[in-house]
Length: 143
Image 1 (cartoon, rainbow, N blue to C red):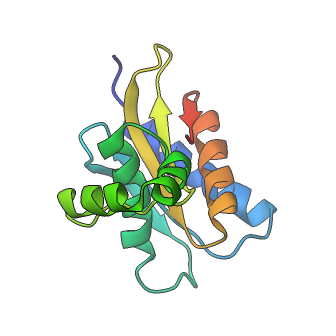
Image 2 (cartoon, one colour):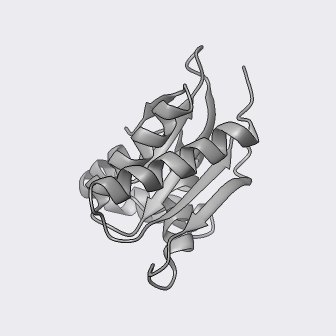
């Protein structure tokens, strides 16, 4: 298993934000966590609203904690809301079950981190994350 590098994390942030500007998204907060759940890179555009870091963190951390993208966590929240509520409690509240939390996989498909984005619609947040991960030469797994 390879490790997520700082350079790759910075590429993810930069490209996700460039993608968002190209698509005229609302201002975003982009957080990249390594496989341990430690912040590797973060940026918040001017004009992001309060608590966007925490929401981005919840999307990325939840994906890492469960080993599935936050899109799938959202589906599970609809199907089994009590389970997702219990897991959210178990991980200290750091789980936001909506699209925008995307696992980062290396060439061997091992999870090496996750991206969480918040600021626009959940689908647009996810699209920016996928663009950033692809630009870093890694595989995106949104769930």
